[in-house]
Amino acid sequence: TESKYRRHGGNLKTRSTELGSAVTGSSLTTVLPASPTVKKSIVLSSESRKELAKQAKVTKEERRAQIDGRHRYLISRLADGIDLSEQQVEETIISDDKFQLIEQFFAPGGLKKLLFFYQDVLQQKLNASSRSDGSTNSSSQKKLFITMGSTEDFTGTCAFFLRTSDEVVTASNVSQVVNFGMFDCTNGDILQGLEFFLSQIMIPALKSQQNWGAVKEGLKNSQIQEFLYSVDKFVGTLSSSRQNIKDKIQLTKVDADIYVRNLQNPFDYITAG
Image (cartoon, rainbow, N blue to C red; front, side, top):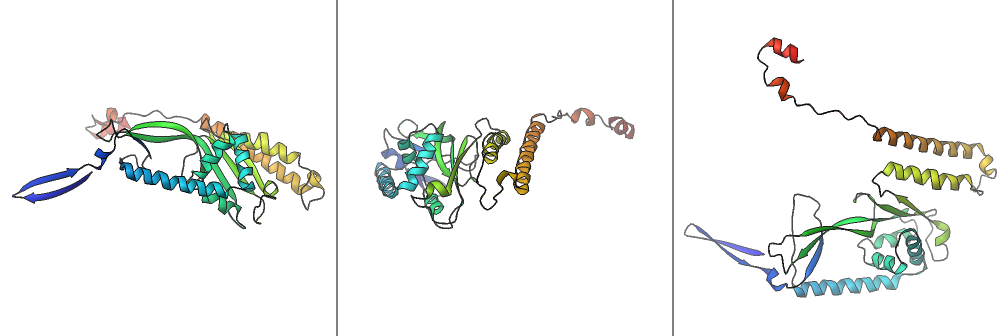
């Protein structure tokens, strides 16, 4: 809504024109504002929405044309780990605002990690035809999206890709230089998810590792044994920390007014103390 204000003879007159009046029978989905105290709804004209949809479609097709064997490797791993089809994963990736992070991950000396969150995302749905006051309905929907891992809360499943080399990632070497893993936090307990990942997946994999590169003795090497001992010890520390947090002491809140409202002389203060 655009409003223009004019003062005439001490009176404030308002003239309003509503852009939203041109929108009928449509629904818009917008991301929640960063601050819970700020509420803002944007109503676009039908022409503007069509233009944005057209631009988004062009961008998606351009990204789809870029998909090669490297992307297919990522898509297949994600589809295997998450209950989604490869087609669903592909559509999600080419529609993501952070699609460029994939190219940065493939580049020589590029990103060391590529993260995907699969979890409930809170969205606002605005029905422009039936809600003239601009009010919204909030709903949660499970979504797969690319993330840096530092801006969104982690409440679901994290699928990650890690590079083992600074060389450029190609379709021929992607399976050798890129490792895939998943980390579950669907119950909201990050420590438990990390403990399970290390104890049930990583440590068994390390202890069954035959090739340790330049270390010819493998598991018989003292440094390798010390490393595995440190990892085991770290998992034990995680378990202890998780138990300590779960069994933490909760102090009862006390209403201080009961003790201070009738204080009148030094003896009362001594008694209250």
